[in-house]
Figure 1 (cartoon, rainbow, N blue to C red):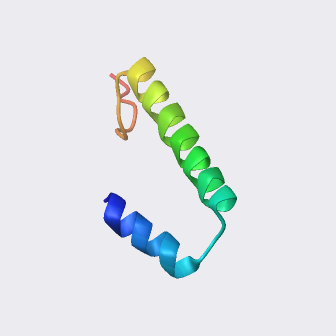
Figure 2: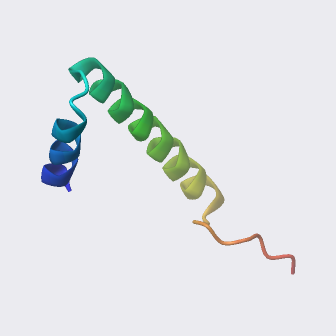
Length: 50
């Protein structure tokens, strides 16, 4: 995963600051999604009404 990501970043030739910002956004997004998943006990399942 990391070599592919590094290759993509190298091809885009974006600044390190932009890359760090994108990584930060991705971490926050995944982190918040994981917290919600842990709190609800569900992943991407629709709520069951029973």
